[in-house]
Length: 116
Length: 112
Image (cartoon, rainbow over all chains, first blue to last red; front, side, top):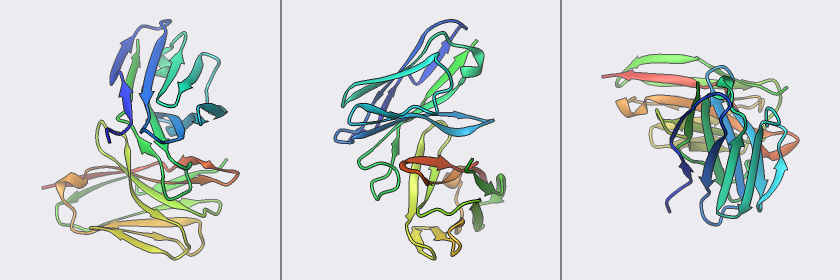
């Protein structure tokens, strides 16, 4: 299996621009998670989906952030407009049965975002 | 809110040495997970613990689920350079076990 695939791996953009991060989960996994990692705040859950439906978006920092999962094999995280404080590594993860079970979360390689 | 504190924050050791790190919580966990993050990559699950007192090994790694259920420990024996990375503990949040909370991380550097 190819694992969780994320694109792009690196993104540099200017403040005010729209940024779209993409994720392809592991085939057959029905949970998809978006995380953000920064030095100050560590690894934070932004939003997660179950069977393509957003279940909990309480970690999404602001209305500038939105996420979609149009089908079982694709999800996007969009930031519009982007700000320098959005600079971070964004991870996508997928799992078969949620977090606390035997089949736990598999992380992608992450997208390193730098907003100038 | 719920927090997982890891110590030490960072470690600088020589190849061949043993490593010990721990994770503590202010509240009870029913599952403890240990992840490792290599530089430039996403976290990878190392060990999962499901019962208080449980001791589980994965090669040179051994993790224990604390008796109080508020802590967990990870030991690495005979460290090698590829052990370099950040080690995170994690556990499901009490009100929604689909969500994980991650610890603050222990950064390990191994010198040959």
